[in-house]
Picture 1 (cartoon, rainbow, N blue to C red):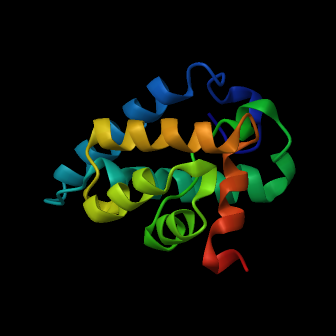
Picture 2 (cartoon, one colour; picture 1 turned 90 degrees about the horizontal axis):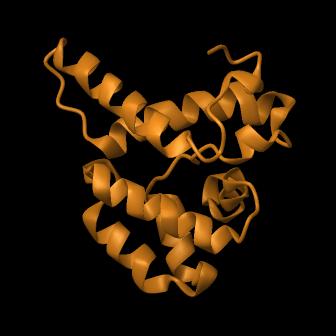
Picture 3 (cartoon, one colour; picture 1 turned 60 degrees about the horizontal axis):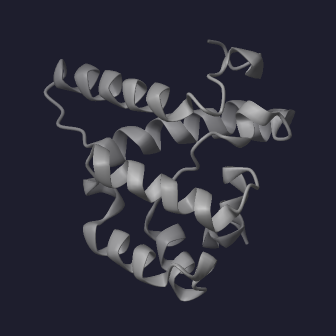
Length: 135
C-alpha cells in the first residue's frame, strides 16, 4: 500500500481487520526495540500517518479514506464527553478513564464502533472537528 493511491486501502468493511493487523505489526516491531506499545499507542501512530498522507493530501472524499480511523487522544475524548457527541457521554468518559494510550485491542475496537455510531455514516475523520487542536 502506498499513500499515493487510496484505492490500495482496505475496503470499508475490511478496514477494522486490516487495522488490527497493522497494530499488531507495530507492536511486534516495537518489541524488537524493547518497546512495549499498546493498541492505543500503535493506533495513534498508524492513524496520524494515514491522516497526514491521505486525509490531508486531498483524498478526504474517497470512500476508503472516509473509513480510516481518526487519531484518538485525551483532547478529543474530553471534547466528545463535554459536548455529549452522539449522546454517548458515558462512553467517552469511560474511554477517558482508561486513557487512550492504555487501550487494548478490544477497548480500541469498541471505541471505534462508538465513533461510527456518533458519526452516523459521515467519514470518521470528521470527528476531529471536536478536537481542540483543530480550532
